[in-house]
Image (cartoon, rainbow, N blue to C red):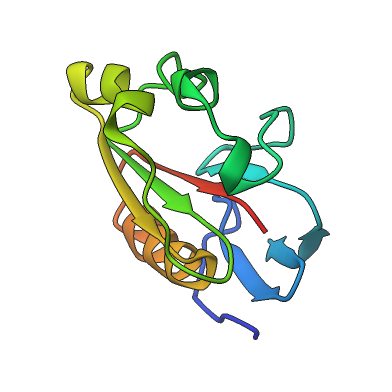
Length: 122
C-alpha cells in the first residue's frame, strides 16, 4: 500500500508498506528497521517478535524518544513488560501495533514534530 503525505523533504516518513517490506522516502527495506525524523537505522539486531529480549528494547534508551511505536509485523502482538521495563523507567512511552498501523501513526506524529521512533518488524 502506498502512503501519501506532504513532506518538507528533510524528515523520514513511511511512503509504503506491504508483505515483507516497508518504504521510507521511497526507499524499500526488507529487514527490521528503526525510523526517526533524521535517521533510518538498520543496525537494530531484532529479526522477529518471538526472539525479542530486553537488549532489543534497551537499544532505544540512548535514542531517548518520547514515544516508541513498535510495529510487530502483520498482526499486533504485545511483549512481556519485563522486556521493556527500562524504557518505562526512563519515561519513554511504548505502543505495540501491527506494522501498517505503526507506519501510519509514525507519519502523523513525525509531521507534528514529535520525538517519535518507529521500530518495525516485518
